[in-house]
Amino acid sequence: MKKLLVVVLAAMFVSGCAGKAALSQPPSTEEIQAAQNANSPLAVSAIHGERNSANGINISITFKNIDAKRTIKYANFNVQLINAVNDPVADEISGENQVSLQYTGPLAPGKINWGGLGGWPTAFYHPNAESLVITDISVEFMNGEKLSVGGVKSIPGTAGIISQKLY
Image 1 (cartoon, rainbow, N blue to C red):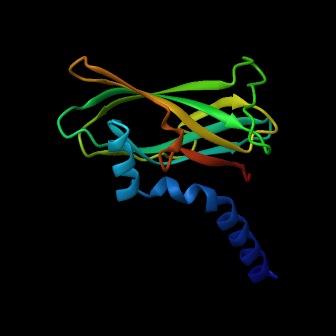
Image 2: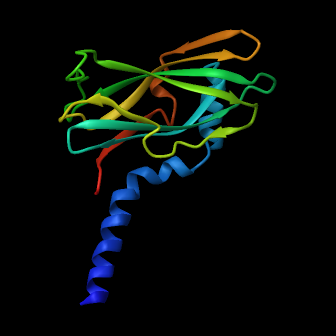
């Protein structure tokens, strides 16, 4: 009986982590090349949402500073949540259909911010959101320079799924 319980618990843990696994991967060559083609100083390898029991969605993003010379001070990600029929959904509290998430550095050239689960806890509330996508990225460097990159939805790594949190 104990062996069966261990197997069942292990299967639940692994199935709950499947969507999160990409957070532990650095950006691929393809993701870096696509980010460079879009003039983005960041290459995103994964974005993941995890829904809690109150429909709050914790969002995590793994990304790399691919700018060869400048250290990132702040990175801002505009994220849109999407339902099962591919339409944006509005946050139940703010009514907005996007959330802006800010990362505070410093993040030196070539370094990776590992997504870690729940980087932005309860960033959004909606029971029907099934996926999420980064729509825009803006960066402020330590030297004061700023750069905005719009229309990043087509860059690999900028779209992800929302899973149910396993307690």
